[in-house]
Amino acid sequence: MINIINKTNLVILLVAGIMASAQVAIGKSSITSTSVSLEFETGNKGIILPWVTNTGAVTGAVNGTIAYDLSDHKVKVKYASGWKDLSVDTTGTTVDPITSTDGVLIQNPLTEQSGAKTAIGTLGPDPGILVLEDTNKAMILPKVASPHLNIINPAPGMMVYDTTAKQLAVFNGSVWSFWKP
Image (tube, rainbow, N blue to C red; front, side):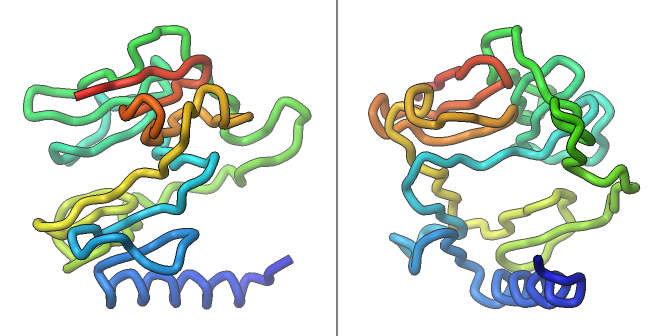
């Protein structure tokens, strides 16, 4: 188990590395293009979006913000006109973010640090947990072939790129929704 001092040092090193390079590869040794700010390894894993109590109550969200809404169990993206639902199916569900079904503590019931932020690129004013600040780079989602078949235990709010169908896939806690341009 990592003690609290080592955890703090790890976070400081990670944040310093992210802010210094403005390009980050997770689970791999390098990015595939200079046009990438954040890229994940290929495998049967996805990113889990931040869970918010209700997107309607989120203040200061900028266009492009993506979150998992606990009020209706949907993945949503912020547009100028409001929040767009990416979880077509309405049967989403979540686990209690504090305890699992077997009663094991998952997350300490701590007060949220509303000003907490990690940025990749030049630190700007936009709020968020992880903000990709570059204006000329993009994030490459984790790539998974047929995530509905290959991710054994997806978490509510998970997002990946389906390499088989060549489309965005989001999981609402019950089913996958797929988006093709």
